[in-house]
Length: 153
Image (tube, rainbow, N blue to C red; front, top):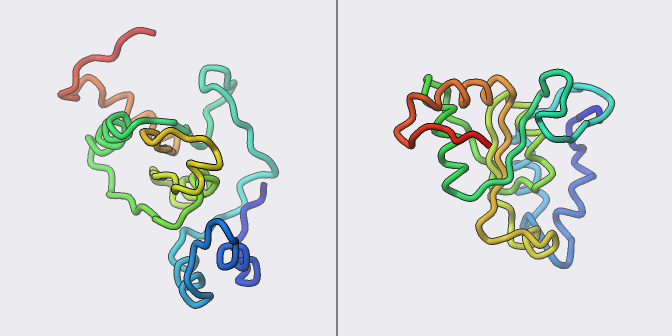
């Protein structure tokens, strides 16, 4: 999965897709892509699975969350003074992992209407990606949260 910078010629689908045209023009697309975090090679593949099944700490923890859960996760990460993170409105759902890896910061994806219809996502679902260090910060911050204590599952 060696992440690499998206070549400009690969922007054509984002400009021309009949059901979901992301950018008005090539100029707009190039400007947007230049603002995106630049990926770095991290490995040759991605392993997705339940957190409790990993034998080592993952790079990123991915959450499917409703807005309240997303707010709480990001609030817990920020409790110890984490820097604000940037949301990239034109990001596709698949970019959430790449953005969190490239930035080393949490990422939030609101899931576009096109992706919601195509993937049958609920209107109440968002995606939150936390680099593992931020996930640990969120867990450590739970006792200080004004939202109560965690429940045993």
